[in-house]
Amino acid sequence: MRRSEVLAEESIVCLQKALIHLREIWELIGIPEEQRLQRTEVVKKHIKDLLDRMIAEEESLRERLLKSISFCQKELSTLCNELQVKPFQEEKETTVLQLEKDLRTQVELLRKQKKERKQELNLLQEQDQELCEILCMPTYDVDSTSVPTLEELNLFRQHVATLRETKESRHEQFVSIKKQIILCMEELEHTPDTSFEKDIVCEDESAFCLSLENIATLQKLLQQLEIKKSKNEAECEGLRAQIRELWDRLQIPEEEREPVAAIMTGSKAKVRNALQLEVDRLEELKMQNIKQVIETIRVELAQFWDQCFYSKEQRQAFAPYYSEDYTENLLHLHDAEIIRLRNYYEVHKELFEGVQKWEESWKLFLEFERKASDPSRFTNRGGNLLKEEKERAKLQKTLPKLEEELKARIEKWEQEQSMAFMVNGQKFMEYVTEQWELHRLEKEKAKQERQLKNKRQTEAEMLYGSAPRTPSKRPGLTPNKPGKVRKMNTTTMSSATPNSSIRPAFGGTMYRSPVSRLPPSGSKSVITSMCSGKKTPRAARLRANKENMELNGSMLSARTFKGFQS
Image (spheres, rainbow, N blue to C red):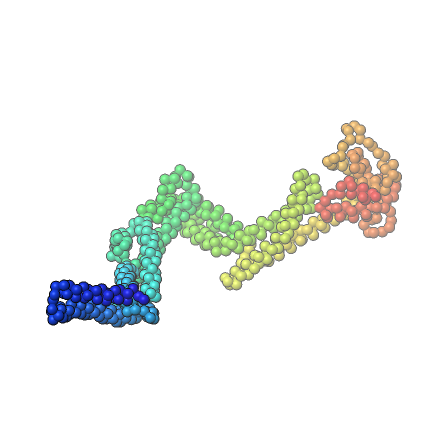
């Protein structure tokens, strides 16, 4: 049983006791029955009125609760629609009081969410308005009368964040361009004359409209100033190049060049004017020393001819080079020619450098070939021969590769330029082929000269015998002491060994025994020696060995001779 029910029963008991107590009082007093009845009616009326008022109050409370529930349900439905959230699910088997409380709590929560969303929407709209004014962009399209959804607010936040990043980026770009524009204006000594230029230089950075159009106009202005600055710099550099060239041609001493060093940097108007004055002064001085200037230009022309591999005919084609009539017209012709040659060299610089590299490699190759045929290279110290052979082997590999690379580059250039690339008056590959052919002919000529020399020497030895030879000292061999040179009888030596023409390995003078050799005609008749009459038919073999030694570019050592003897 509920406590309220127990309390109700206790109230009834209490009421009954009160009525009994009243009856007892009335009995003691002696109140008649009629008055008792009246008094009891009064008690009944009081109790009934009290209970009726209490019931009415409770009924009124119930009505208020039901009205509140109805109102909250309606408002909750509206808020759910506005906020686009799921409808509130009422709990089953709940009391009116609890239902009203739950509905009222949910309504207050949704009201708070609605208020927060509206406040955030207003804040975002204010930020968007401010950023759009700075960036000169249209505002974000959003319905300010309705409650935004969470997704709409998120998109709006992202949009504002993007605008803020765009503003920062454009502001940085504006500040950077502004600094460059101010520097260019200072360098050009340019005063802002248009309203836009004044806004850039003088106005507050935060007040500048960072629209795409203004940024593009800024970049265009900067580009114009930079072009003008570059033009001034190029003009100043051209004047400086003229000054240096005139200094060199006029052979101006260093002490006279130093005062002009202050204007050799910068491109401001005062610097440009000072440079022009110096050029005018040097030009006037050049006309006063025209012969010296022309001679200096001719030296430079000769250098460019060498760098461009001009042939003799090409050099002679410039007739003013050989003129002795030093006039202003002759100077102008030389100036025009040096400019033409300088431009020609710059256009073909890579090819000329490649040809120059081939020329250097070719000279080095010829030097190695010359050393290879020099017998004295075997007397080197410190391993130079090994190092030389490695370099020679490396060069023999790289030289053909370099020729192929140059050939491909020159063919490509000739296709692009529709003209032949000339080296010393002929095509490069023809020039290379000619150099190789000349080298082959020289080697063949040297070989024939060696063979002719060997043939003559052999014939002389066959007729007159060999000349005495003094052996060179070799490292590791102890020479005989002076005065104790062992003399050997030629007859004894000739009878002791058939190789009596070979000099001994350990000092001493030996003379070749007369030997019989075949005549040049190849007949089998034997020529008798004028000294001893001995016959030693081995001249052909000795001559062949000697020729092989010379062709290989080396001299046989004592060990090699022992190999021959064995």
